Image 1 (cartoon, rainbow, N blue to C red):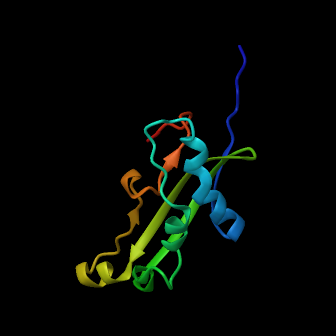
Image 2: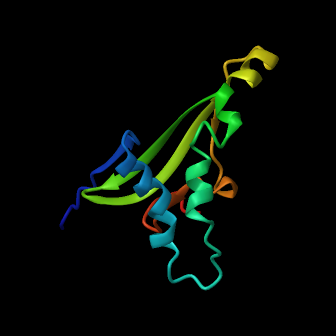
Length: 113
């Protein structure tokens, strides 16, 4: 019997190169899917630009990449909306949903969209 070890690494997006990998992942995952309608890359980049997205004025967020060796195989975003925390008086955070287009993972991941 052969045992295969799977080593995956979740790491934060820290550089412009990482951000480009984060944004471009779905384009490689779904490039052969005839039903996939790709969003505009410029619009996606704008979501993480404080000048173009005023929601970020009251939001703390972190983007993450999932790596399997040197391959990017997934992404997710985590948010804390400080206005919501102040309003509900609860320390809550949000993970991006697939509908938000910020969670994607290859079919080898357990929780594939």
